[in-house]
Structure formats: C-alpha cells, structure tokens
Length: 324
Image (cartoon, rainbow, N blue to C red):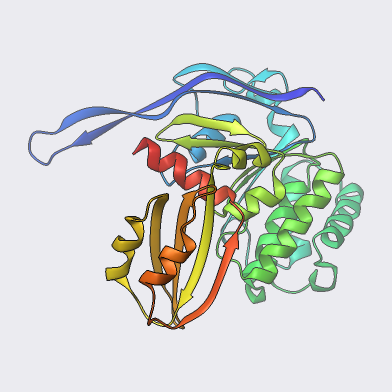
C-alpha cells in the first residue's frame, strides 16, 4: 500500500498575549516536530488529551492551517502551496450538530452540498440515494433535520463528507456525545468505508473505539509524538502488568493506601458510581497479591472480583503519566 499522508518534523506555533496591563507575547508550540505516514486504505488514529495538538494537526492536513515548519503532504501534494490539488480529493467530518441546515431535509442538505461540490444534478441524485442508504437514513431522507437525533445528525454528517467521493476522510471525534447504539452504528459505517478502500484519519477520546477501529495509532502529548504502532503492539508495552477489578458496596478510601503498600502493587484507584465502588489494582505480572488485598478488604461486602486484560486505555494513561 502506498503512502497518502506524509508528515515529517511538522511544527505549528501560535503567538498569544498574557497579562492585562503589561501584555507580553508568548509563543505556544501546538505541534512540536511530529513525523508519521498513513498508508492508503488504513484507519489511522490520533489520540491525546485536549490541547495535545490533534485538531491543529488535522487543520494543517486539510489545508486550513499553514505549518510553521516541516513537511506536510497529502496525496503527494504540499498542503500549503498545492492545496487546490488536494481539497477536492479529501473531506472532513467533525463531531457535534453544526455544519448542517436544520430547516432542510436530509436529502435537500445533501443536494445543496453536492451543488457546492459542482456535482451535476443526475450524479448528485444518484450519490445522495446511495450514501443515504449507506448511513441508514433512506427512510428519513425527506424529514427535516431539526427532528433528527444526535446519532442521525452525525450519520448525515458522514453522508455529507462522502458526497465528493473523497480518497481520505478526516474524522474529528465523530462519536462524541452519542448514545451507545448511535456510536456503534457509526463504527459500523467506518468499517464499511474501510472495506470500500477509504483512508480514514480519526481522532477520539474513547480508547476502546480506537482499539476496535484503527490499524495504527499515534499518541500525542503537548504537541509531541510519544508513540506510534498497532493497538496490539502498544498493549504489549504494558504486558508486564496485570489488573484486577473489585466492586465494593461502599467507598474504602482508607484501604487504598494500604493496598498500594503491598509488594508488587503499582497502583490502586477507587471510582464511585450510583450503585457501588470500583477498585482497580494494577500490579506486576506474576506477583501474588490477591490474598493480601482480600485480607485488607475483610469485613467489606464485595460484589464482584475479576482479572481483566490490559487495555489500550491502560497503556495510554501509563504513557501520559510517565511524561507528566
């Protein structure tokens, strides 16, 4: 597979002002020397905290922002000096409900955007019908968008992004704010697009989503690239750890520090929800800690106790904690 996105030593700086009376200018490095390539037909994930540089990177790739320094090519063309050769071959889809006309139907929205893409009426009608079927909106095609749920709006956003038959789709948190069923439907659509040969660059805060969809993942932190690999290989970075999860009837904050003192335990975290508490204990692989943990929790009602596999979220948090 050939390379369709080539980023080498990419930088982007912004100048901001601080202070009320004596304002001082300060340079902020939003993207600080990152390098990666994306292959044709690949689903490539960009992960990172808010402010890590994900959206700034995408804006440079979709020709909306000029790099301060470095190489940024899409489909073999420079995104700043040759942007006109790129724009009609890519598209951008963002999470949320903006970008559509709520007083128009789904079909009329797509016809309007097809006109902006200079697609002829006959071809626009054909593409609109096919894409509405792909995103599961054929039966709602002539209903006003203002009556749509968030999930339906986001599927229509994807339909809009497919109108010009792009070779590369950039998706910035496409499932944000969706219920589990809506998010699953969107993930199914992304899989279908991959099967059709589309290249997709995806940002998300949902680690399980990245693990499920992406062929490779790049993790950004404060504008720098800290890791890039397949989800499976990234999870191997934490193979020396094991995790147990214990659901308790009520909080045991005073017990957490005791558990962290057990030889082999790396971290103990207590989370409370409406029903009970979840105690997550990470420990060195092979360490015998379970008996000691249960001794500390003696007298506490335990609802469940289970070992679980290392997840991409575990690796992500471990990497960012190591850099903080």
